[in-house]
Image (cartoon, rainbow, N blue to C red; front, side, top):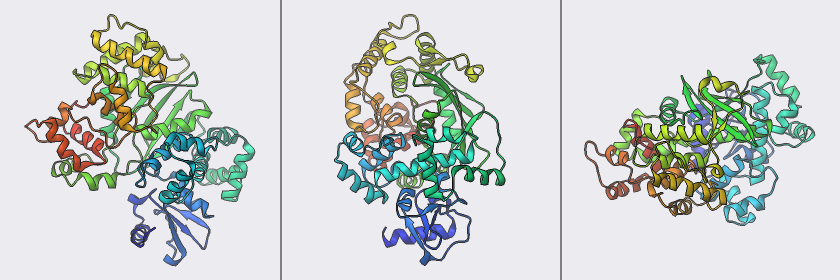
Length: 491
């Protein structure tokens, strides 16, 4: 780290500045422990601390996590950490289990670089190897399950990807100098836990976080029977490994967190569901970096004061979202939502009857590409050209010609998507924004954006595109700000 960075981190440490929580970690030489910058313990002297860009780097240097501030509970390191696009994609793939088998060469191949170059990039930007990042992530996830659930240790070992209880126990003894059961016993003495059967995991989020605005966005676009907003909670159906489940996300009583409750999700899928949920709700967005760039535009600066904590909503399933985007072409959000609900009810798979959330109107798993590739969409109010586009998309996804792997180049993805008749740049950019979570995706020709940037006038696409150059690399967040200043716009 540079002297300037060390100076900033030292001030943040002494101030216990929550804005830096998850951005760096403080290693204490005298205790061999690493902490979050917000740790409530007495601040050690400057000469006794070192700063690390990631928990994995501190772990590789021989430090163990603090049991008081619990580094595993920090907001995730922003997916856009560092300046390397390869590192950003690599972090997302690792978060979704790409190194569960320890194959760095395969990860590097997916990213289009050599394994040696990938290791060099990770060490430069994060101070740790890809395997160290994956190991720390797995360890932290297991520690959270120990602290926040009553899951048996064998199931936690499986959920965190350890493969065996022995490996799980060895990892904890090596890191924490205690067995997992001893750590839970300490938790139980300090904070008796609710022993109900419902599995709930607490997801910390980077602040400020505008849950109300995000929930409103999903509420307007929720596919009937597949997703629903009830009160302050978002719910949706999902299918993993042929098994149906339901997830529910709502604000936690604890500040700066959401509670994720799962029904019907297999233990082995728990880590993936948690990571995907973090991405869908953009919990780790680097809000400070985004704000510094966007507030340079006076129009966006005014919006940021009203819409603090703006996020780009993601999507549980890339195919489902793309179908929804096609339906939304040239019609209202409400009309597109109605059509999506008809497609789900007619061609989707009925939700298992043992899933409790059916009482909230959740009844279907969204149909697969194989299913929609061969249907005619008769009698649901869909024009022929739109139906043909959805069939073409479904066939392309089913063949593997188009996939939604976010390790791919967003520009290449958009070009592939636009090769399908009936899909234009607006749809491709919208899908890149919400499915690939590309922070710079921007549907320049969107009518809502053209109206919102200079009301009451409507500017041209060329004018908007030129003005948006100064918003890079956060144009997707600018789009959400602009849509949020209107009502019901945005796909």
